[in-house]
Length: 182
Image (tube, rainbow, N blue to C red; front, side, top):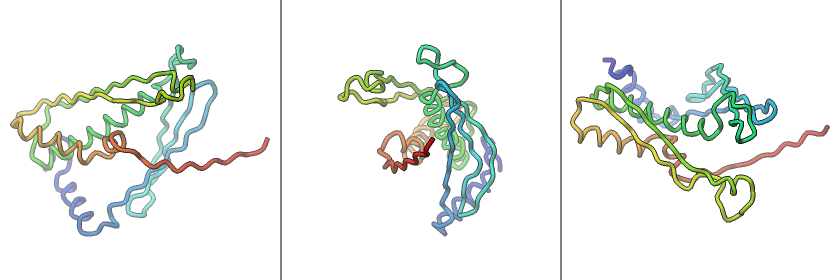
């Protein structure tokens, strides 16, 4: 059965496989970003690992700042990409979990917004956080499913979405710096 574009049988197999063997539930991702001058960067996705097996991929993700923030406005900025990653991750969760629950989605839209205080980013006031204090998001779902089922789906996504978790809880950052001579 295919629901919301999701192969429900394949999804159930994946769930059973990971439930029965935790080692099969490991996915590792890596992104390399190169500065291209001014405020422009290009990130490259070349592979990821699933269950210890490397899977090749080939994607580029450009980023730039708007001209008002000293960029050339050639691509979405890092904050917009961050929110897009949150929305995309939650969208996958909604589509797949709705399918598993037997909920047909007619439409799904997630709108996210947040405000940064540039005084923190520019180092003008150490008391001001350079990141978001809060991020607001609105999920719009059109479905014939009972409201209670859609609410259950919504609660499930907030418990299981990796990027929702990344936004809602601290991530331990492990920095490494390599300085190459001129």
